[in-house]
Length: 231
Image 1 (tube, helix red, strand yellow):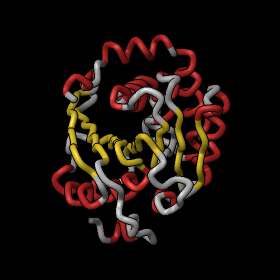
Image 2 (spheres, rainbow, N blue to C red; image 1 turned 45 degrees about the horizontal axis):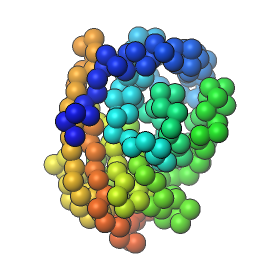
Image 3 (tube, rainbow, N blue to C red; image 1 turned 90 degrees about the vertical axis):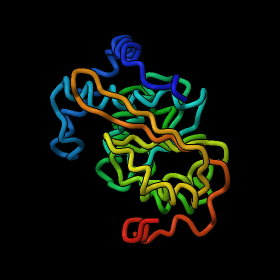
Image 4 (cartoon, one colour; image 1 turned 135 degrees about the vertical axis):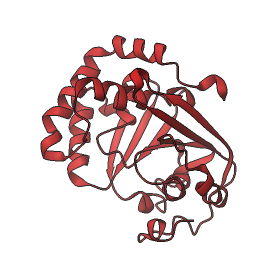
């Protein structure tokens, strides 16, 4: 997977080609941020690099035509930048805060992405138990949601066998503490891709887990057990 490290030259070009949509997304973020408490990052260049480019860093890891679940969508990172860049992707955005769901629906509509995405007001652990969502997705992505051992229990039940979980992490991939959970939940081959954001904005990692077997039916445990007693 080494050839899938983010090429920020190409990603900068993608931002430029889609500058009207990304500009509209930035304006929506600033317009609604005070009411919805979407992000602490608000400067235009900070948003461009830390949110837009970082979200796009995982684009090459998503197979063509993927149906993707996003856990803890928040303000729509990485899902909305990925949808702007890649018209072949469709998303289910799973978010447990009502106000953020409201923002996501507004943003998807105004950016012309509503036909390729739906917003689900639900906790990830509930979605993972629901037959309508469980093991239905080619991939599941999450960014700034939880540590890897917790996040795996939210994400892996949503991924179909043969699909993948892609976790956006900081400089520390957290793989050491997450390996047991990944194995228990059906994960197989795992790659950690490390990169530096442009302009000295810091080191990041992508943890990409291939799902090699079905998730045991007793996971996710639910009722907050994922956070209280991480695997």
